[in-house]
Amino acid sequence: MVGAATPAVLERTRVLVEPLLAAAVDRLVDELRLPARYHFGWVEADGSPSDAVAGKGLRPALAVLSAEAVGADASVALPGAVAVQLVHDFSLVHDDIIDGDEERRHRPTVWTAFGMDDAIIVGDALHNLAYQVLLEDPTPERVAATSRLARATTVMIAGQAADMAFDDLPAVDLPACLAMEADKTGALLGYSASVGAVLAGAPAGKVDALEAYGVELGLVFQAVDDVLGIWGDPVVTGKAAGNDLRERKKSMPVAVVLSAGGLAADELRALYDTEGDLSDEQVSLAADLIVEAGGRDGTVAEARAHLDAALAAVDGVGLEASAVDELAALARFVADRDF
Image (cartoon, rainbow, N blue to C red; front, side):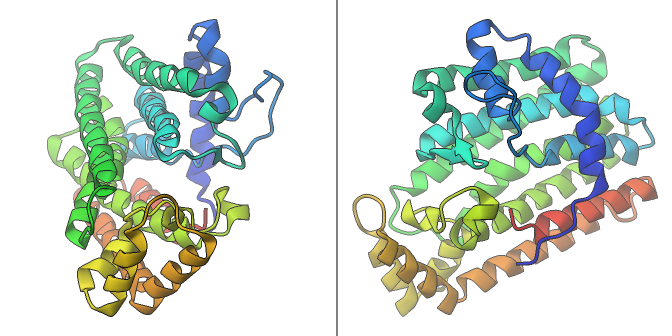
């Protein structure tokens, strides 16, 4: 997988959103402010300044572009951009606990650095803060954006629940995996890619087109994430090599193989039918099985198909051409990323 050049919109959006995001986080009580700021990479666990690698900022960028796509100024999208980033980060803090991940972005996760109790309540606080940000000025557009965020978050949580339920299933086929990932990742990206248009009071057809783009982009993102979860470079991804296999996750490459059936599927199912994490030797064997059975290539093909669908969703629906070009560049960046 070849890394793509970082689109300029990510930095442009970061400059707009990060000060507002930091101001929102700083409203948290003292006991929660430090671990929250630590999670965002702004400080170390002792409160000293940090030069940690920040997240990509994909969701705020989509929010801004969705406002610009309907002819509105970027500033219109900022409450939605901050809110969706807060919800995303609430989910990351909790996901790290659920998955037992001890490292994110090359340093200890919040629960590892501050303890599980603090991490749970920090995630809760970030979730609640998102709605406070949107409803500070309860205009009809902001109320509509808040309602849509509640629905998107509900779907995202349902996707997380389905992902967890997969752990107890002997096998998961590709349609079930895609449905779970559309919920877990696609719902919030669909919201991100349309919230700016909602806040701008855009017509429903344009909002729906942008949301459809975001949902498809979510499947692109998750397909690439699933490939990186097995074959990504730990130096780049910040996670251990083969981590998804070690934890016996039924991610998209695994689901492609299990759906196809045959000897490779039987061997992979037998490897997964064990207690505890897989050993390094088992991880290597599982990765080889998936490649030989077409699981990696099949997942890359899924990513490309959903990339095409995302681009088609915003083509010819009357959106601003310059914003559509940036949405396309951002989608290709997601498809080609290596981190």
